[in-house]
Amino acid sequence: MRFSVIEGFTVGAPSPEALDRFLDDVLAALNDLGAVDADVLAALATGAVEISMWVEADTLEDAHAKALGLIMRAVDKAGREPPLKQRSMAVELSA
Image 1: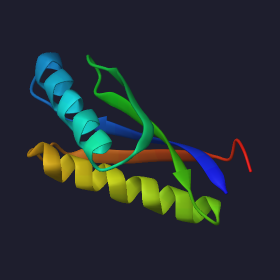
Image 2: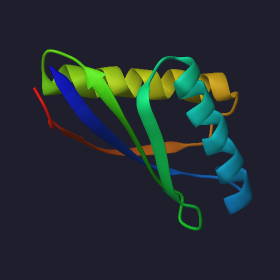
Image 3: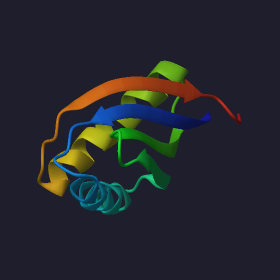
């Protein structure tokens, strides 16, 4: 089954510019890792970030876990570790 997954985070960064650079690196890493239609939306002033992508999985829980795994690998690949406070949501859009 195909799920559209949106994972939300609050990211601590020293400046909006630093957050913007970090998120560019994370998005590039997601694409390198094979994420499907990954996108990043952010409120740079507050650090609120949403990362969305399509995920193939059997259940909503599996889709959530798969998306989180890709995001954490992308954060590692980006070479930085800002604190991430997770707030997440996963929505099934198609079967």
